[in-house]
Length: 415
Length: 162
Image (cartoon, rainbow over all chains, first blue to last red; front, side, top):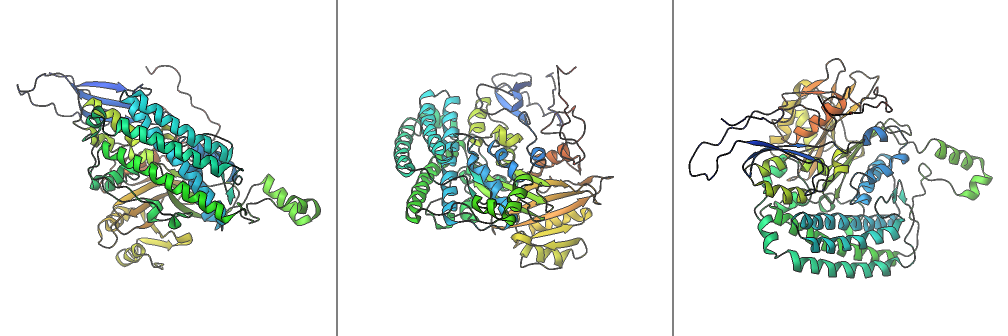
């Protein structure tokens, strides 16, 4: 009699019938994979019930990187919370930054200068590139292909160099501010960016040559980790996973924010919903992001120099000359520095399309300078649980590419 | 009460005039405040009613309004891919009996999100198949996102279990 070791909170799975055509009869065993496994990127533990090499059931245990994001946000001012979203999805920090700031601006009802919106779009797309490159590159590494990983990481370095030039930091950017961005483009950025885009395109070509038709890669990805359209909806799965299953859901098109309604780009959609489709969708999205970046650069050059921050006194410091000479502005400066901006009472939910899917922020204010609630709707956390369904009955080896292309980022999943 | 041009609010007010306690559409977010006793049937209507088609339960979270009665508010965000519209459903839960119906029978995506709300706010979901802590460890005492849980309080988990 096989040993029964049910997963926590579950009924033990029924044993397979004793039929003699199966080559090997073994007892179910429980395998602990993680929290830090060399073949996964991300800190997560899988408790897998195995029959030989087949996954009978699995329990996904998250939370190893929980650091109290929401609690921390509730203890400072609205402004002081800006660096925290950067550290949620550290592959695409600007996007998380953007989601939080847009939600706060929705509460404030701010109008943004046009140049600022294009700068934010540019930064966000650079960030999305970095995220997709990490996902595709790391997936190759975990499927034992070192060279394409290095192509991917080299291209990601280029996007990070550009982000460094844009805002001074490579990974945790802290670029988007309430009512604007930290500063305008530095001189020479457009040239460097166009140069970077050309290099990234060349690297993507190399990556494509080595990986897309590679027999081992295709065999391990095609037909594994399949999810249907209906399941995507029921599990609220968004982002490249939903698109690979055939749902043309991209909030940049469905609910355009910033200037996405003025941009020309396409949404790639898959058919089967397996890992290979996810890979293809991600690669195509990178090409689309490069297109968007080029359009942003052209538009920014056309717009010419202009303000990148709102002049709204609720979130901006007054000009220094006025602070030194006028009472009103002096008081305003003092209040802004000591208290931080006050945000009108109310609740708001704003979702943007991050690299992983719908990244939503639900913010509640009571009219003071400190948030009542800052909820992050993390796509990593919500895209992860259907993995149990995707992998039931699959081979243990299928877990690796499936987890790679779900692209769970620990910082965002556990917050 | 007004429906603010939102098809979801209009249907809710038609079918559940007494269970919908308030509506608003501030900042463009259609919102219904509903009685917790009828949450499940209201959500079923929103999911199944033709013309509404909220296939996705996008988000579940809670807010602790310490000092108000009822103290907690559970906040649901629904999205319809087919119709490209959203609605927010809020429901209040008192401190003495922090319990509300689980939405796992309607949308499996509620599973982890409700576990998270249980973990961080201590609100139970009636009918949830597997209500365990998710972000924190089983030995953790209390629910840290409640406003009366001090931010500085530490509960390190040291050494091996048993």
